[in-house]
Image 1: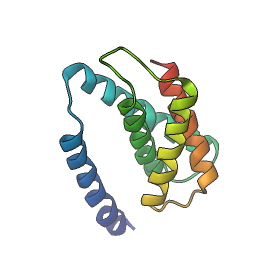
Image 2: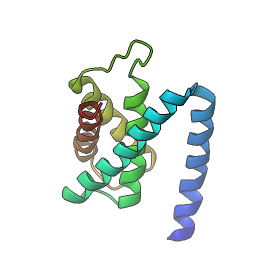
Image 3: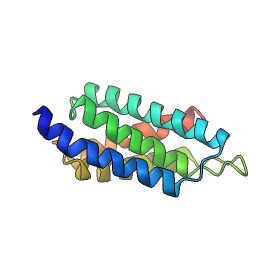
Image 4: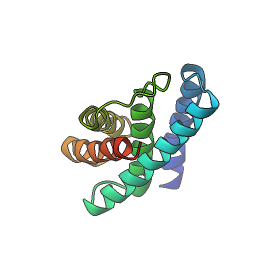
Length: 127
């Protein structure tokens, strides 16, 4: 089990990190917000997943981190603009569903959408 997890998870983490470095121009304030949103996303998704008995803790943390990064990327920091709660919930739901399919977790699309929407909405509310 551990060998399988390591062989599947680490290459994806490396690719994700590489893409983040290449495609996300990070400034100091933006980096702080991005890391904050990733942390909130991971924690929220883990808790929501446990409450709904949805997926594994590691899988939920990965999906939540991706959701937090996606929601954070949609916020326009130059104009100090944050999208609406509904927009962030939709982005969270979509990201969580796609990430769930990529990591091939055992959760249904509906369960992933609900946990992602909760994560996106919470990130927006905490802005």
